Length: 316
Image (tube, rainbow, N blue to C red):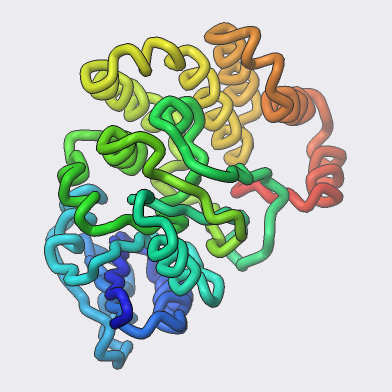
């Protein structure tokens, strides 16, 4: 009997991309699948778009605005599948993603979480030249903490029993809700997370994203670090400075995408100060630093020309 899959999709004012995301889920070849969309107090045309869908596999849950964690928890409570797959309302799955994940889990009962590679796209669905991790093999707790290689929850599938063991998403966090949850999953048993080395998810970047506010991201990061220090003090102590350095690089990329080049430079500097040796040994840091310097020093026209040649797009 085919394994059942529950796709959970929290939605908050993502009407512009919602239909594309839902279509990419419902077009998957998995036989026993449901898609649960939680309308988390949307004020745009999300409700109207959802009403226009006529598919027995689609379930819509409507609630007052409660935030991402509560929306995810609600969807999981409604879900009936033995696997939970996450899809943000602005991201897109490529054909065959669900079948690939289910096959992988059936072949690897020791793995609780699988995640695919992602490609970043802009509001129009065009690829942008932002490098994404190309992880291979399993992921330890320390590795996940050091550098969140999933990039988006839309890349991830988890066994339902593992999600239940890890507990609910933490609604007290301002950001990094997914990272904190998967760190708890990683604590269940060693090396229970593994990559599927194929691009199966398109991760959309746009100005309205929650992750675009790097200050809130760092605030959420501090909350996550406080939590994981208590749960796994030795592992955290071993990688905390490198992990924080990498998080500052990620926040620098968010500032750069928004056109805040001076802020990007400062975040790169802070990342270096946290772990100079690891910073200098990672080419991504050099690239981010060079991009930030170019943003500050080059005329806008020259910078735009370079970005266009590189296939990179910013939100502003």
